[in-house]
Image (cartoon, rainbow, N blue to C red):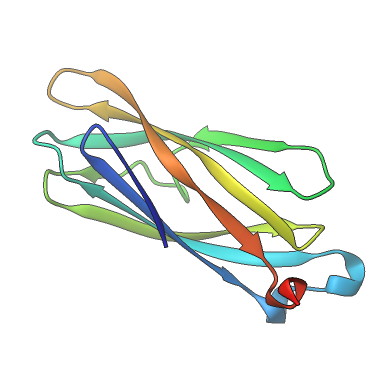
Length: 128
């Protein structure tokens, strides 16, 4: 698990290779990741947008941007957390992801950029 704290918001990511959904012979490697967003700040926040950088060894950088996460724009009170699972596919079986969330501090409308830590996605047999 990797973790990063920005403005009192802790983002942790755990990644898992999904062999049942992958087809290495067709250059298709599937990974899931569980993200936990903990609001350790004294103010309520709402996650508005996400921006991901996906690096796939030997392939061009991909950027993925959009509103919320998995169709939600969760409001996270102080001391609470939001967790979700999503996924990504790679062609090489080796890569990483990192990015940021845009959140709004609801008390004053201030927009904050919260760092999503870099995490590796490596099919286990690629390590041999």
